[in-house]
Length: 223
View 1 (cartoon, rainbow, N blue to C red):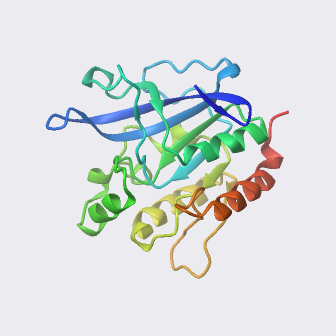
View 2: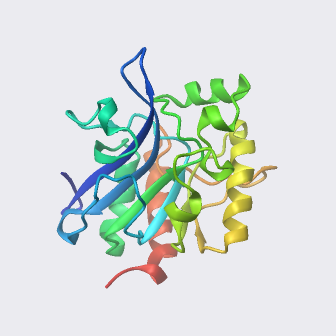
């Protein structure tokens, strides 16, 4: 359980692509964040039900991992209790403010890289959509249609130009789909970029992001 702004949350992740040499998973397709008092049951079948109140699209899973006892190969492709990456506490703060019961986090890339530099190295090294697990290019174990549905989407994948290819694919899918798009767009960039919820070492920007998301999310808040 995670206590944020007086509300308790729990997280479930869908991990896949087992690495025998490291005895863990290479990728995570989804992270479910739910209020503990919402009565939401995440069956461990790898599906995308129930539909979320909102979806957040970020860069990659970061340091998120299965909880102890759920990291074995028998849990591949199933939704299991997980620890969130630290940035996802920003999502919980937003949920506490909006009354959202369930938010689903998807990423430009499923590949688990605890440091952003590791992801950038894969991209600049020529990793293709399959290696990265690019959901918006059909390379994840779930589809964006199933994961996002008709929910409002908070775009929050950052502004590093090395994400440009992944970002363009995500932007094209989201705009064709017509979901409401929330977020703080980056200025003067030649690709679709959006402010990250919690820039490293800059709490001022993190607070600004949260306050702006509260404002933008107000029309979609739950009573």
